[in-house]
Amino acid sequence: MKRLTTIITCISVVFFIASCEKFDSQIKGKVTYPSENNEERVASAALVYKYKVLKNNKEEKISSVLADSNGLYVFDYVTAGEWKIVAELTIGDTIYNGKSGVISTSGDDTKEVNIRLDTYDVSNNE
Image 1 (cartoon, rainbow, N blue to C red):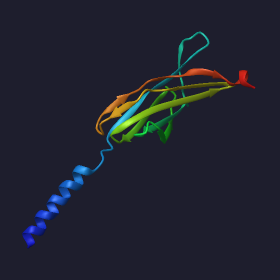
Image 2 (image 1 turned 120 degrees about the vertical axis):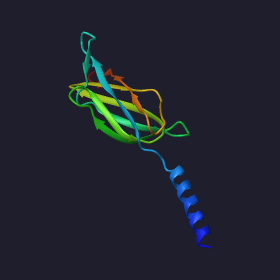
Image 3 (image 1 turned 90 degrees about the vertical axis):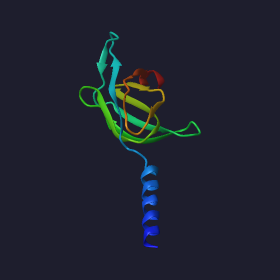
Image 4 (image 1 turned 30 degrees about the vertical axis):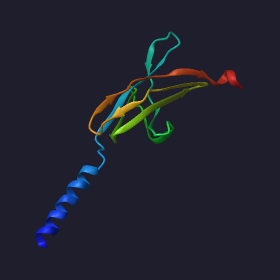
């Protein structure tokens, strides 16, 4: 009986470990926006959101980070699945925004996703 209990416990542990979701993927990149001369500028302090793509093609906001002074952002401990990255930056009356396509992670990989923001001028919509 003791041996049977040990075997059942070992099998249960193996199934538990196999069913655990991995949190080791990383999504990182650089956020840029066009200057008046159409030159790329780093979007320091851009707000960057990570969205989970759900089975019904809807998106659920999971977390957000600020891009650093070089326009770089990092999402650590990303689970396996499908994701989108959305970024926005406001300078004066101008809102810059952009988003990625669908990103697939395996739970133990690193994806580099650079976002180029486009402009949306709020002052023209009063």
